[in-house]
Image (cartoon, rainbow, N blue to C red; front, side, top):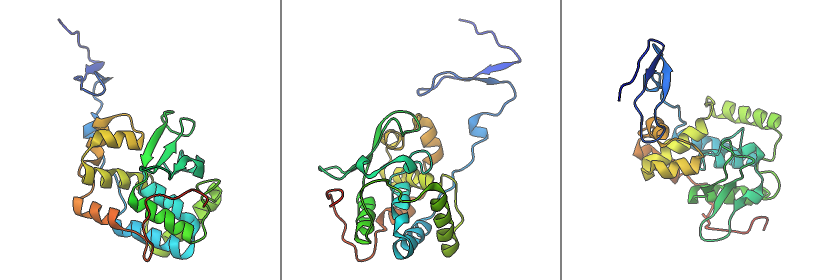
Length: 225
């Protein structure tokens, strides 16, 4: 079989995930333009959650589900309510309906012990587990987030909570196919390229170990109890 080449296009070799792709001649390949993702450090995530617990408990769900579940903050997290958080059964999880998911496909995200501990802290601080997951309008949320950043001296990273989750999860679990399902991404190759070694395993362990002070972790509880 012969392939006819031209100056206009270059045929890229096919790969196991996406198949062959065509790009204009002279354009840079994805690998040559790749930028490392920016993550929050474990210390920064801890500082933001500590601030929320002490000053603005309403921010706890935003940081908890953003950092420890990797849910997209604007497109998905802002549209969820507590009925999507399933505490019953042996495996607590968050349901992202197709109507909310960026990919228009329903997915389920594990509600790990770290996330559960912070949800429990939110409840103990008087937070309600019914209605909207984020108890603020978008404008109020932006204001309160800015106040948290100013108080902690942290610079906000666009999509940084999601990048932090993906990097920290892969550093500990090493299963890129599972991460694709949890994060609602489409391409294991892209996930591996951006998040493999995105965070050192030691740093990831610190990230997942951070739980609220003087709050007992729980396995499951009934929403609205």
